[in-house]
Image (tube, rainbow, N blue to C red):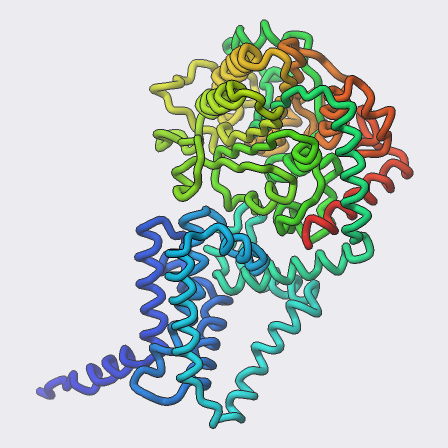
Length: 575
C-alpha cells in the first residue's frame, strides 16, 4: 500500500502562508476583529467581502513594495502607511463616531490649535518619525516599475477629480449598497478606501454643479445684514425645535379601528383642535432631508448626488441656527443617535450650531449631557428620556445670569423601524381591529400612546422652565410600516393629495398650542423668525427662508426662487 506523502502539501501550505500578500490580508483581518471588539465597524468577514476594497488595498501594498528598498523588513515598511491610514480614521470613528472623509483634513489646523503640547508632540512626533523612516527606505532604482505602477493610481485620482460623475456612475454599478443614511454601513459594504474615493468624487461633482453660485463675500454680506436687522428687531425669545422620528398620529388612518384611542389623554387635552400639518420632503426614511429643510429654509432638492447633509463640509452655510448665533443666540443641537449618521457633525457645524451633543455611548470622547441608559430592549432612546435630559440642560442654561437666548434643537430616534417596545416599561395594550391588519401600525399605535404622553409632559414642563419660549415639534417623515398598501387601504388622511408627506406639526407659543395653516418643513425657519420679530420678518425679508407660510410654493416663479436659494446655500455649504 502506497503511503501518502504529506510533506509537499505542507510545504506548499507553508509557502502560501509565508507569502507577504497573504500575511498582509491576514493581518488586516486580525486588525479588523480586534477593532470591532473595541467598537470598530468592519469585521474580518466583512473585509473579505469588500471586492472593491481588497484589490485597491493589495495594489497599494504592491506599489509601496516597489518603492521600498529590498530587505527583510520591506513588507513591514510597505504595510505601515496602509495600517496607519486605517488606524487613524478608525480611532477618529471610535472617539467622534463619524467616518473619515478627505474633507475632514481641513479641520486639522483647528485640531492642532486646541491640542495640548504633550499630545501635539506625541502625535506629531509619531507622524514625522514614520514619514522619515519611509523616506529613508525609498529606492528609485526600479524607475520603470515605479512609473508604470503609478498609472492606476494616477488614473484613479484623475477619474475622481476630473470625471466625478462617470466615476460615481461606475462605482454605483459595481459596488454593493451605498446606504445614504449611514457612512458606517456604506464602509461595511464597500470598504474604507473605496468609500473615501466615492465621497471625494461626490464632493468634486457638487463643486462643479455649484461653482457658478459661489460668491462667499456677497453671501456673507447678505447674511450679516439680516443678522444686524435681527439684533435691532428681535425680541430675544428662546426657541425649542424638536424633530421626532416617525411620529405619526395613528388616528389619521381614517379606516383604521383600534381597541381604544391610541392618543394619550394628556396630549389630547393639550392639543385637541390645535394641531396643524407640515409637508416633509421624504417618506419612510432619510431623516436628514427633513432636518435640512426645517433648519435651512429651502427644499431638499437632492441636486448634488444624494442627501444634502452628506455634502456638507462644515463651512458656514447661513442656515437659521447660524443667523441666530451671529445675532447673539446660543445655538445647540442634541441628537439622540450616532454622529456618523448623515454626516451630522459636519452638517450641524455648517448649519451654524455652536454646540453638538450626542449620547456618550456613541461619542465617548465628547463633552455631552446625553446618555442612552439601558436601550438593549428598544435599541433607541425613548423620547421621554431625551426630553427630560434636554430640559435639565435648558434649566441650567437659563439659570445662568445674563445668559444668551437659546436656540435649542433636539432630534429623537425612538419610533424608528422596527418599532420595538420594552414591554416591561411600556406594555402593548392597543389592538388594531380593522379588516386590514398591519402589525407595524399596531406597534406604532402603542408607541404613540407613550410618545404622545412624553410630548405633553415635555411641553408642560418646558413651558414652566421657559414661559416665554416658542416650541415647535414635527415628525421627520411618516414611518414605512408594511409599505404603501397600509396607507392606501387604511386611508391615511383619506388618501388626499400628498398624504404620504403630510404629518402633524405642534406649535406652542408662550405655553399655548396654536394652529397654523398647512406649511412645508422648509417654512419653519421663516415662521420662527416671524415670531422672533413680532411679525416684522416677512414684511422686511419677503424672499428669505420661505416664499410664504402657505401650503406650497407651486408657481414657477416661487420654485425658481427657492431653487436659486438652495443652490447658493449648497455652494457655500460644501466648500
